[in-house]
Length: 280
Image 1 (cartoon, helix red, strand yellow):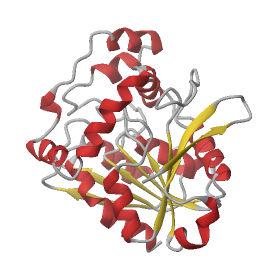
Image 2 (cartoon, one colour; image 1 turned 30 degrees about the vertical axis):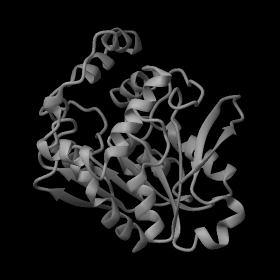
Image 3 (cartoon, rainbow, N blue to C red; image 1 turned 120 degrees about the horizontal axis):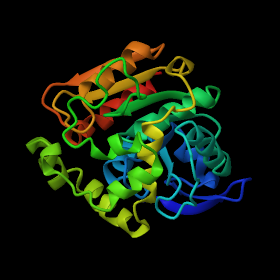
Image 4 (cartoon, helix red, strand yellow; image 1 turned 60 degrees about the vertical axis):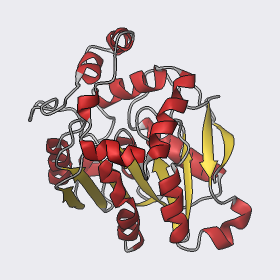
């Protein structure tokens, strides 16, 4: 169970943050370390039950926050991916956390990398699970995506992405049978959290997609801490070419390619990924 609080930023914005161990309990809850969880797109920002359970079994304190326009956090017009690095550190400061690990799934992957790029003195190591690579024309960035319409429209700007949102519908063919099985079992909280996120509308997802499809505000070469890139070979949301690009361009990358996994089922590796972080 994570406690929530609102973190006020110097620019007047606020971020809805979550913490499984209050700062006053740091001596006990931070024994193994602190993990900042970066949520996918769209979600509320609350850490998911399987993440909290795996962390608790390892004595890890989990903190997280809702990106702008998600889950009660203020909007941040024209935000780029890099801005999440500063927001993450602001949340860590408010929670009395100095150094921490970062883990992001899907849309959270690029934002986890942003923290390491902007604040390598604060982020120890990163795990990117089914995360996008920066937009490039060096490979077919949309190739293998079952439903690339949102990201394609985002290349034309926010107004085009917002228009697309008016008629967008979920394509179930994006997910493998293994993904649906994961949502019916261990990762049911993910599906429930996506549903809860609808309360705050589409702005967070729209802004995420525009940020993903635009310059991120940092180069992968700036991410000098160790990074574990985890990818399902059957992923139809973020195809394996994105993981290959990340591994080729991050200075210190390790790759785990999962033969039978898609976009959701690959999350079953979270406990092992936590062990990888703790060994850094």
